[in-house]
Image 1 (tube, rainbow, N blue to C red):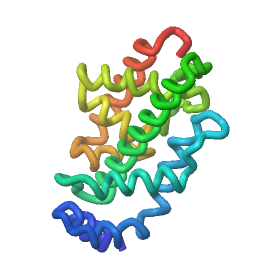
Image 2: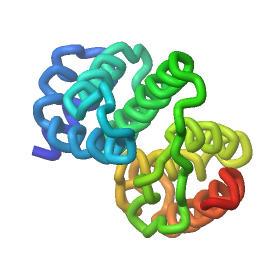
Image 3: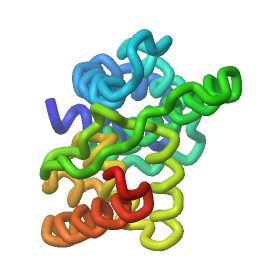
Length: 187
């Protein structure tokens, strides 16, 4: 099945909308896992649920004119980055509507090798810090997007970014340290 998924990704990359439609049911479970990971740090009663986030990501993936997906891991990383954008945009819109809504602080102090701690996640603060990190070290920012937002393991991140696992480990450590410093002393 992995070969079939890769073939569909390649066809979708070249503009075959039917291939993308065939691909989605095959990777829906993986997209749902990524969506749940993104949503677990959101406030209670969030208006987007897992299905809505997966659907929004699908719509945005389908609208991409110049998709450069290489394989399953890369496609899932891109989908996860899109989910991040959806949640950031949603949070910004909500904040505009309710200025001063008690935002939670991002905590990185308990980040393990698999993901940053999202129990107190302020998605906007993380997005702003990640954008600043991208200006300093774009690859480190992409590693965070794959590892934290995409839930990819070190090997999967290395494959998606076409770098070595050792480089992923170094970039992940660098990014966590940098984000801790950027976001503030409470981390």
